[in-house]
Amino acid sequence: MSNTGFSSFVCLLLVSCICCSRAMTTALNQEASNDRPVIGILTQMVSDDVLKPWGKVFIPASYVKYIESGGSRVMPIRLTHTTREYENIFKKINGLLLIGGAVDLQKSDYAKVAKIFYQLALKANDAGDFFPIWGTCMGMQLLTVLVAGENLLTNTTAENIALPLNLTPEAHSSRMFQGFSDDFMKILTQEPLTGNFHHYGLEMKSFQENEKLRNFFSLLSTNVAENRAHFVSTIEGKRYPFYGVQWHPEVNRFQWDRKLNFPHSPHAVQLSSLLGEFFVNEGRKSSHRFDDPEEEDSSLIYNYTPIFTGNLTGYEQLYFF
Image (cartoon, rainbow, N blue to C red; front, top):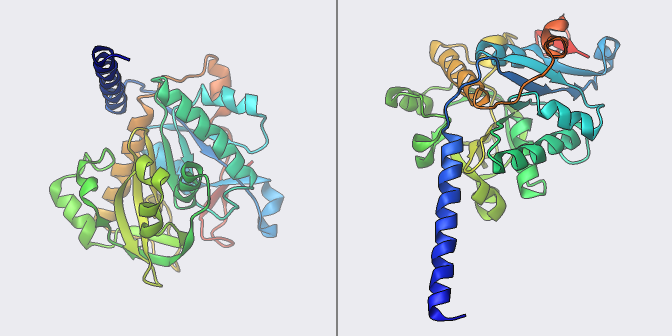
């Protein structure tokens, strides 16, 4: 190739990269125009024998209320559909919430179904079809497994404790915290507003040493576990609207077990409200929809009644399916 040809090729390559970069930035910051969003919440298998009489899969009601309070409706997603059925569901919902819990992050049905939606979301966002994913606790852990292609979790026990966040410089330019005032960002670092209920997590060292994770996610906050391990506590995708928190924003408003350290201060409630509204507003950027109003109505959580389980679990209410 001649020098002139090579120079032209380099220029073309640079222009292409710049255009792609601008297109992705525009997509991440596009206007929220869908006023009837539906967020899908992936169910989990019922493992406790005492709960099995009510159903095979469940969703804690606190996650449903968290999404509804942000201004969205909820569609429960079972673990027994075919890949084609999940592809059909994907075209109708405006985002996905991966809840906390305890399952195998590579072999369980929960992990396998989450991977289907993750791959669909990657492909859709690459094509300019906006689709956000939020992972809470185990949901965030699962996102790191999907991105890294392996399970890098280690013991980072922070069980039944509320913590302030150790924010990174990237937090202040993040999308997740863009609606937070400077004063509230300071409060996040001073007051224990985030409820932690986990035994495993992603150590900061593991994140920094893994190129896939480092290139995919911005690290927004860290915390220190009981064994002094520094773990990743908040992340967001650099090119994709994917978000993860190792802590539980939904408990601040919707869980009340006296034995569990749920933050209920005004600032804790405010944090939960801001994040719930943030993720729903991300869902408002998605143009996916149901074509059939009757199918839409029959698919929503309103068709089910939560069961009181506060005498059996740490959750006051569970939806069973």
